[in-house]
Amino acid sequence: MTDTAWLIVGIVCGLVSIGMAVWLYLWVHRQDPGTPQARKVAAWIREGAISYLKKLYRALLMLAAIIALLLFIVFGLGNKDPGYGLKMSLAFLMGALLSSVAGYMGMSIAVEANVRSAQGHLALAQARLNAGLGLPADVVRAQTAVSEAVFNLTAARNTASVARVRLAELMGIDPRTPIEIADTDEPVLAADDPNALTAQALKRRPEIAQANLNVAAARYAVGAARTVNSPAITANAGLLQRGRELALDSNTVFYGVAIEWTPFDAGFTAGRVEEARGNLMAAQARLDSTKLTVTSEVAQAYLNLKTAEQRAVTAEAEVANAAEAVRLTEGRYQSGLGTFIDVLDAQTALVTADTNRVNARSAVNQARAALAHAIGEPCVREAKASVSARG
Image 1 (spheres, one colour):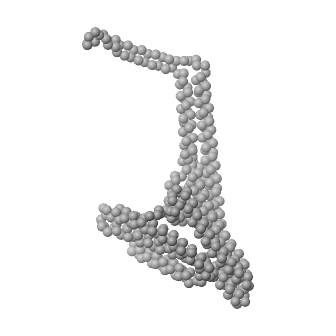
Image 2: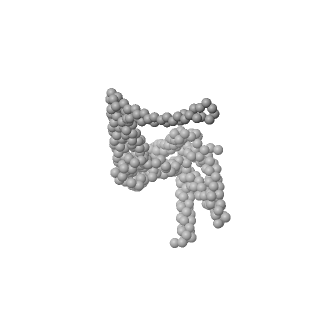
Image 3: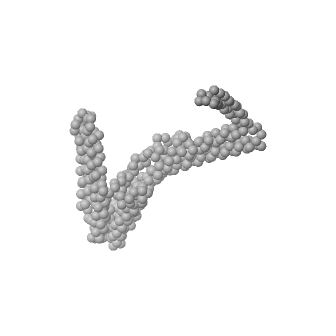
């Protein structure tokens, strides 16, 4: 396919994606927003989310303008096409604008979806009650589920705000600085062989390098200790001129050689040599111990990573099973063959499975970071957080 054809395909796919997102956005907004109290709480949450987005986008606007200017300068100067820099800047600004719109829509739909989902179950329970297929207790349970969903949503947003403040403190920046966490993963290490990872760790870990230098220094100390009572040879020479007048008429040249040696020092040199050898053995022992510690850390980190990856796979399967259980349970309930408590239990199991999946993915990233540290991987990583300072 030509470049033009690929460009058309990309544009068409983008338009289809935007249309689908807009349709889902409007579909969620067409659902019942719930009771007045639920709408009131949702409005508070929406107000806080919009306020946060405004502050964030205000800071990002300045950053985008600076980057667009840099792109215009870098790609515009010295280019045969005088408008190439402007095209690059406009393309960047368009991408930033579309990303901002996507962020706004995602934040808005997330705030609305939770309460509307619980309200949908409440309406289902009420309809079953009105049709004589449900129990009054189903309505009460659905109302309780709506209240719990609103409370959990508020608590989760408060927890996220506190976590952002804590992250800012750990990063050493103003806690009021808006922080947007990027959804990225730790890079996967190229090697997957424990022996290769251990060999890499023994080459890169600074503890090993320090221990090797200590051993080398101890060897030099042994050699220095042996030279304490070695013969010392000194030599000197000079010229002496004397006379009664300005022109000196008497010259004297003198020179000398001296040898100093103390063959009998009451064992002082032998003691120094033994002490240096002991220090060398201790340094070598510390080197071996450090190698064993590094090897153990690499092996433990490798096993932890494999365990975390297996847990992540299991968590994905649990989410799929829980989602299918919710679908079947809701179908049984709508057909009058199940109870509402079964629906709530299935939904609770789905939430638990989804939470376990998030924790499993986080454990995989933590295990990858721990293994990278164990093998002495350089701390050069893609930024995990986009921090924008207030103007």
